[in-house]
Image 1 (tube, rainbow, N blue to C red):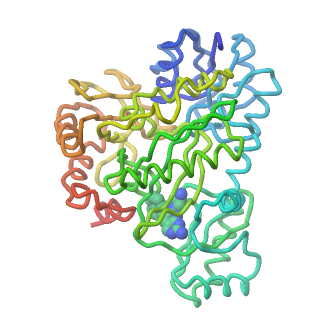
Image 2: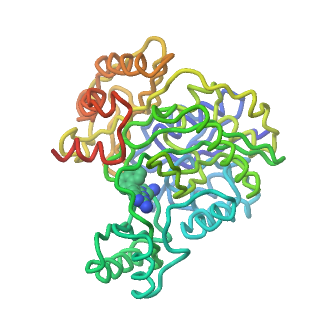
Length: 445
Ligand code: MV4
């Protein structure tokens, strides 16, 4: 097992990884930017190294600084957390080249899944349904026209190097196609340095359902069920739950088995998430994320498995200590992302947290780096806390969530707690029959 891990991240996720390390006796090294010197992840770590200025490119994305910090602190491994360098194959390779362990999958798996066209091809080969569309990148207008006529409008143009919804264009009919392809290509080139785009049938009211998988170096692969992440705004997840209120145990077992078998075929190791759109009773693969996800705690709550600990152990070449039959899904969990933003306009609300009081009691978990007197910097994302609620069933979970949200006091900055109180009063949310358009409709009215 590792003696010391450097955590190349900040905020709540850096704390989450540190807690997993400390629970299993691993020393931790925090890295931080100049504006993060007083942050909780620095205070909680055994050691810390300042790696650069406030801009992410100068610090949390500064590979030479991070590698140097790992070397001078005698770290064995680097955990990338989420975001930042967590899906950067080149970084994973550089880490390995410096005789450090990258806590994540192989650079090749990161590269393959980062190419969304390649990922779809791999999925198809493994027998997973994908959204109907082009077989690869589309190179000419006439090719796009014939594919679109075949699958029928509306269609969606996506960037091959995109993901997470960036650079997508909906096309309603053929008259809009030429211009949309041109725009999508130039946006893709500007954002990702790769202008390739592909086409899919546009599904208008799907749910976003993702399956958590975990694989060791010995061919043992397990799925940990699904998460319903349909409540998003501008491709930012806001509210996630597990199990999904619309998925049956049979569907879970079938999709989970398909996911786990595929991961085994791929020779993938570590934790991963396979994303599907769920529409009219069918699951369509869209992307795979090759990292830990922000919403992993809801899966931890209903399975009792510490996903971050398992991820670390697997990277250290341990065998998974449980099998699929050992995994029991019990109860219901919901995560609310508490962003420091105006709940109506969503403009960021950085600044001093003048007072802070957290809810408590049974089934309440808070993953947060906030403390009273902390100054939320303006340089990074606005995730301030994750409120994770567990109860024996969904109805009681929603009731407990309402109770916890109303206990939570975060003063000095605005947060989206009021939005969460509205979300749990929405009839579509209460019934479970919400989809990826629900939150957009709630926040544009
Ligand atoms: C789609 C889609 C409809 N049809 N693909 C957005 C994020 C990225 N992972 C894929 N996304 C979508 N792909 C087809 N063929 C709609 C979305 C989408 C979406 C998906 C999940 C959650 C929220 C969303 C919000 C808008 C669009």
